[in-house]
Length: 222
Ligand code: SAM
Image 1 (cartoon, rainbow, N blue to C red):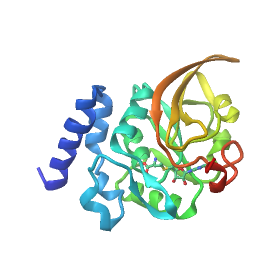
Image 2 (tube, rainbow, N blue to C red):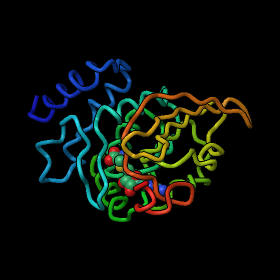
Image 3 (cartoon, helix red, strand yellow):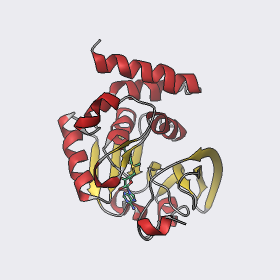
């Protein structure tokens, strides 16, 4: 076992399982993704630390526990088509791609979308497509999705994303006006116009900026 494999194993034991995350499908997926390939070179020694880390464009790669928690909340079995809003480094997209049939991921910053695309290709992920766009509008050409994950905090749940869920599909998204204390929601589409909503706890995220998100970074400093 090399140094990173051993750090990854410790991360799974002490950050995920110790916090009660027991979903073996998710644990195996996290174990399969070399997180050191998704963090800036100068931060590689912190790749498995229990925190988010800065990446380009003033954004972050999420804390491993949050990625695992949100992935588990999607209840993936393996045959799903998943939409991710907020590609960032591409790390969570890789974790999702380890489980799901296909992952569509959208990032608003070109520099992040471009580098995530290269990283995922270099790691041979053939079931992920990266788009540079406003993810609050979803990806209508590929809808409906069995699962949608939003990795940034918006003021509310974008109606467009709810509409792009398959019946039975799950949308996991942090919402609220205080980015340091957002409510993580799981929305389940149970009928054409019927949704169930669950509160999964409090989380911190960078802002979701777009047509159905915040107008700009300044709007979030409420
Ligand atoms: N999932 C990422 C990872 O594994 O590295 C972390 C995502 S980071 C916490 C949130 C990302 O959402 C940022 O890269 C940000 O630019 C992006 N974002 C914010 N608003 C967006 C929008 N409307 N559409 C697409 N991406 C958006």
